[in-house]
Image 1 (cartoon, rainbow, N blue to C red):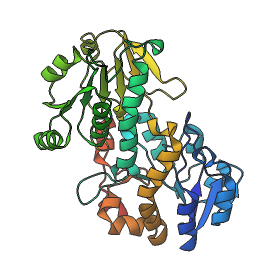
Image 2: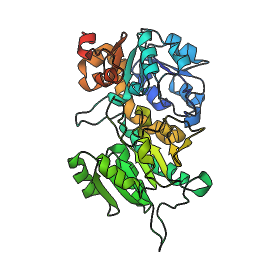
Image 3: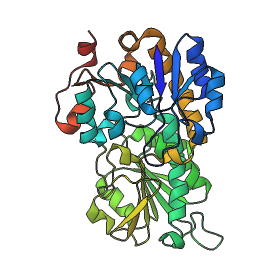
Image 4: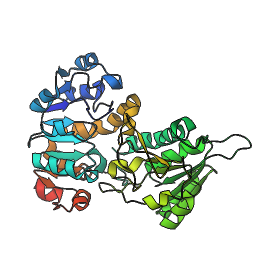
Length: 371
């Protein structure tokens, strides 16, 4: 199979979908790997490393798309890439369709197959290709939130951990999954007073057991969220409903409960955001202000640390990519139910229920289209 790796073109996206080592494994299995020139440069992988691995380095994304059958990316295809996609293409990447109706409908018109990292499952019920980037984003959320709490960045001028004689900042995290857990570890390690909310009591019991004493677990409901907002310095949105749009758990009206100069980091923004006033931003212009509250809503946070993120991502994606290439896309999807859960579109049909529900589109079961 011919596997293509285009250079990521989303604003300030520095990751690459395949390392030279990962490409070498595909080539060893008899596949051809085409890599757009400089695709890995910002992640620390110059073209020479891909050539040494046996890849063919080509001059443009057009060449990658024209010659490849299976295209592996990091982020959803941008409009200029949509124009290069054919119905016989399979794209393997983060799509987050439920956050963008325009992307969903444009991709459906291509008739191409979409296998989305974020909806592939594992035996234990986790999302194995979402986990590594969620770990990065959760840790970064605290790092970025701490920065924007500084007065020079427009924040209240608060040090997360405080100092002897001065109370630490209050960090409230909505969502106790991978993002929320990693955010809580970092925030508590810096000495902040952390509240982590979830509506799963079993998860809260687990978090209560593993977290240090400066982390308090709270059941998530509008009353408890509102109460915590009055004393929150840094709010982190970490809500995930796989494949579906995130619910707005913090409304614009609720922002008035927060003190001016407080900060919101909504990691859920790539699924629509769990804060009503959030909209996607970029690393170039990461923040905006609503009701005196600083919002950081970068939709590709891990792109700011591409060396770490690329390795973490490809460690997770490589086995699935190898299966798609070695078995063929359709046979691989038929034989692996967890990989099949990653099928979001096929021949112009929506094959993930969460995406269909987000925009009132017709849903067709993967088993039906693959038969």
